Length: 194
Image 1 (tube, rainbow, N blue to C red):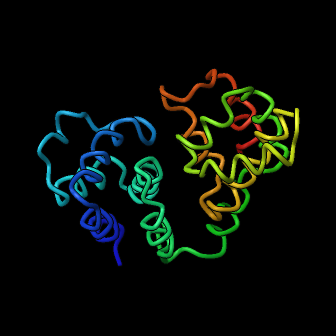
Image 2: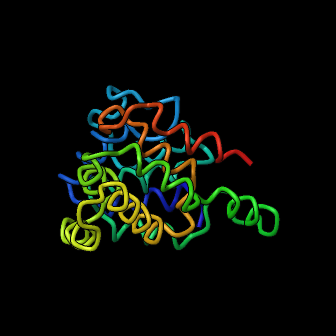
């Protein structure tokens, strides 16, 4: 199935309120260029899918998955991830390249050290983790905020699987609403380049 068709099927599965939330969060997702909010007002699922494909020809499914995590509709994210991303015909080198760009434990530990007390908010609001999961992490790491944040990031990486890339994590955490200093992501960008 072509990427545009996948995106359209996902958007058609959203209820009306979820679709409105999707359009609200979309201008904040992905890398530049952003889709202007005015182009989304009154847009149908077909029009939004077309805008996604025009604006992010290689990343439309990734961007869609990021926004779905915010709604949250994680059931649809996983359905979208079952299909291969980007060029479905690529294997070998592309698979190795993608694997090399997966975020490492070392990078996550450095990032965790920069989160401070905001780790819990980031986990729930931006990484799509549940409060009970974060409570368990808190109990397992009493008094150590850095280890709590690290274990939260590990949980996100486990759930994101092949999407746990440096680029994906940077795009999630570089949104204006994330309570992190922009330089906090330097530990991912510097060591994330292959």
